[in-house]
Image (cartoon, rainbow over all chains, first blue to last red; front, side):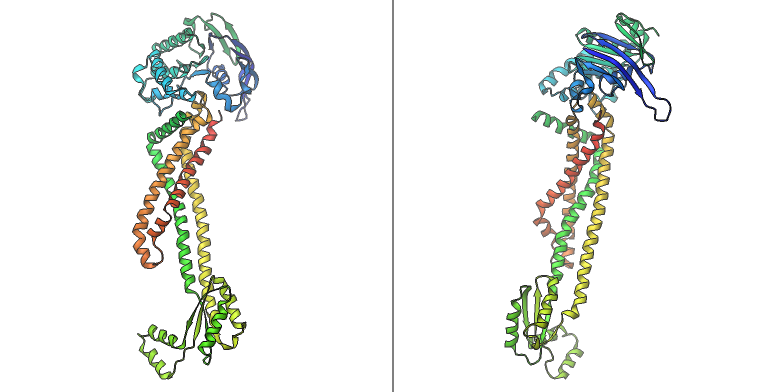
Length: 231
Length: 302
């Protein structure tokens, strides 16, 4: 489903220092309905990799194929179609501050052209799934960190994407909410969606028992089917 | 199509009303721009009225010699009418000239007494000639001095008046030029300020715009509500300016009427109401939409 081929990303330095290599010749494949964790220390290149998959940035070298389509050959005007097949969960939530929980989730459906009936039918269901049924009319500032992350997951999920990209979704949460969110991601995976989870949380990974790709200084140092967090 | 338009308008209105402080600030700035456009639009007709009023007062008088008979003068009048530049001619006989002088100076007994002492009517019969345009007086005057009845003419007073006429029109033309210059400068400043206000307003949303791109919204889906917001700001600014214009014109109507009776502010407004409204709406919404388009462009590149 997703094929990452010889990806390198080098950020040029602005201050005249040597450029930063975020990813160095990274290649791997992700199958449909797979749960993959990408682990590594801060600065290992996890977030860069997810940004490249979302075509938020372009690689210095290499290609990414999504169902045999090279995503860097997609015109900017066609990028929304790619992104509509991906649901993204960000560490800093990236909710629209001036929209309520309901509106935040509805926005993605509206952007895809869903009808009012579909929106009215699906949002209560998804809010129920992420345990936020009673908070539909709250603005993000009225929610706790864990609640905001649930809304982000609901927004990433509501249009039934093929892949969920979760970039440090538990980075700002306490242990209790961390496992809550991870349980939710596993549930989404079990319902048939591919999940790519980037994290540096050892405990989360060791409890999952799923495929783990370990990055260190921009390189893949380990790719195991039932991996653990070893660095 | 209809659903997405409805959604865009709804979202635009929500963005407008949820950021009411920013919206009010943007409207205030926009009111300045629309007011300037209104002022320029209304000043045009007012200055036209003033100029034509002054032009009405300019004429050339041809004084005929003492011994020229009224019949000869009327024959000359007919000849002069044939010049295409001439708009109208008024014949003032010796007696009428005396009558007008006496009437104009009835409060000045010394002057009237000196007139009695002269013992006869010293005034000459004349033709007051009015041309279509001020620039044509020179041609009319030279025709009179070289024409077939030049021997009948005592004097043409165009050359005495010419410096004054020229001065008045030079003044009007320089006022017009200065006005246009200042309008352009002020207009440019106002447009820049309005554009920057909208840009700052949209800058506040730059993060939101990038999130919108990342969750798969198309550029037009993102832009739509911002354009609607720009239109709403423009419409509000136009309507408020219209109200201000109405109040000012109503307040100034009687005062300006006293100074320049030919200018009726309310009449001017009534005659140009729809055009004015159109100009105000076009200025407000046009600026709102263009500023929004330019300002969002930058953040849509993700």
